[in-house]
Image (cartoon, rainbow, N blue to C red; front, side, top):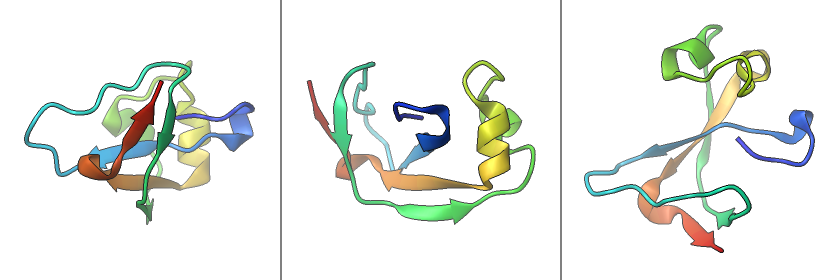
Length: 76
């Protein structure tokens, strides 16, 4: 998840990876093209997002973005 304010955050799921995933660190800038995907309550728990990481917000939003890993660009 990212964003300056909690309400600005969105969870991004990387898909299509058979090789090592790109490494993203706090402060990195990322750009990507993805698609919005609706999810059901309890999604945060199923994917391992904790309360301190924003599980409540993720479940409340009801959607996330799916991005193919090869479409993710990381700038440090």
